[in-house]
Each structure stands twice: as C-alpha cells, then as structure tokens.
Length: 151
Image (cartoon, rainbow, N blue to C red):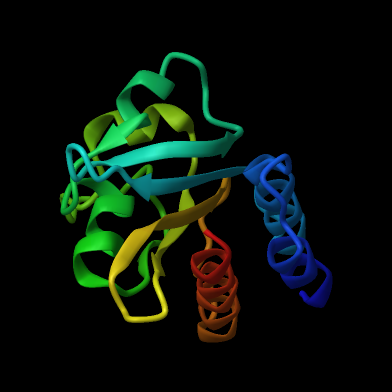
C-alpha cells in the first residue's frame, strides 16, 4: 500500500494515472478499474484511466453523470458504493450495460479534494462475486484521498 501511495504522491505531469491504477488493481487482486475526474465544463465524470474495460463498453463509461451507475452513485453520496455480484444485482444502481463487462464484485469510492469537494471516483472490480471488506474499502478510500491530494 505504501508503494502505491508513493507512486501517487510522487506523480509528475508526465506520469500516467494508468500506472497508479494498475498498481491498485494488483494490490486488490482486481481485473478491471477506472479513474474518473469531474470535468468543470459539464460536471460529468470523465474517464482518465481504465483497465480491463471491454472496448465496446468504453463509450458508455467515458462520461458518467453524477448519480448514475456505480461511479456516479459513489460521487453523489461521497462514499463507497459496492455491488457484490453485478451480474445478478437488481438494485438499479448499476447501468444495464455494466453487466456486459462480465464483472461481478465491484466497488467505487469518491476522490475528494482536501476541502471535501468532489474531484472524481476510483472504481475496481473482479470477475467473480466478491464482497469487499471494510478494511479493503477503507484502504481504497485512503488511496482515493491520496489521488485527490495529487490531482
């Protein structure tokens, strides 16, 4: 975890969020992930980095309204939003196309500025059903806070 925080803290303009996202995915043994940032012009979450997202799904996750989908719900609530099994979920939180990713266990956390304002979201997922522990969600939230400080 410390290595990932060092990557985030020492990120330069030339560094890619992809490197950080891949390190996070490895840490949590996940196969898919996204980092979205709020775009000031339209207030939507714009994808900044992604891994494991099928090409045909990318157009649907490039721009996400706050409050829509897992990332949008995490942004709106400013707290972790988790779905243990996206493939059988009926809560209505996830967009219908999210099932096309074949991801089951997923969680998204907000990326917040030090003043508490929303900057974006960090989301990760596994292909198998999975309930993230409170410790895992806390660790992911901590990494999102570091991203917020570095953004």
